[in-house]
Image (cartoon, rainbow, N blue to C red; front, side, top):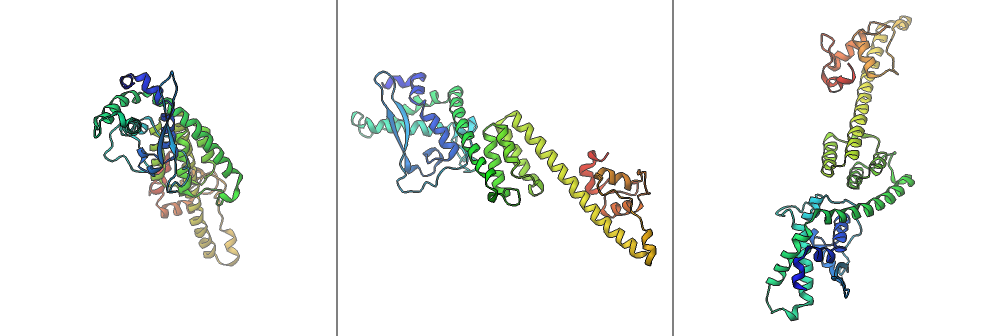
Length: 337
């Protein structure tokens, strides 16, 4: 049988189940040595057949009860699967591009060695090294590995779908209609890895107020999504974050202007004595858009000169002496033109 390990089809038949389990272990942070977490629980077994190669499987035994349960699924990319890497564990340092596959090949080779050690000269360390060298090229096959990732996406999507269903049905899990920011970002990253845009949309609906999502957090989410190169997901995120963030920025600026305007209007009324304060008039349309308010301040309104609005916007630094947009308004100027 030893020579058969030089045949890729033989190795892939032996690893056809454990590679799926390896992808799932990375997805849910199960205790495997490749992730360097709780690997005392990691053991191996083989399904034996008379006509087919033995099929390697993981067998977990939580010896010291240090496994805390399943994490939210984060399906690895093809490159991360090969490297045995999870960015939330920061375990890439000093790892080669195939380090995860090498650890899997080594672990199975060691298990085979232990079962056959009576037939191998004592202290012969070349057996394991030569065996893993034969196994690794067969494992490092994109088609073979992508099949494992497809299975991980199916399982991960089902898990996340059920998890989101529980959140959506439990109002107590949501604070003022929105998830806590850190948890929202964690959920969004999980949904992105499933390549399921519906799951991404469901997560987005759980945190509608993007004012507390920093630009850095948005950039981090978008960069994370680009790793997975899923066009529908990337397009949705770009539209959702850009459009929603812009809408909220416009509302925030409008609210800031109206607050400053109200103070100025109250001051103008106070400047008129007694009944004459009645003649202090405002032509600001509070229901209008920020664009309408700016045009009014620039003197392009059908009612009133916009003098008070213009003075307020200049004090805010939003209009210069030529009534051109400046300051904080510059960041949204395309929507005001």
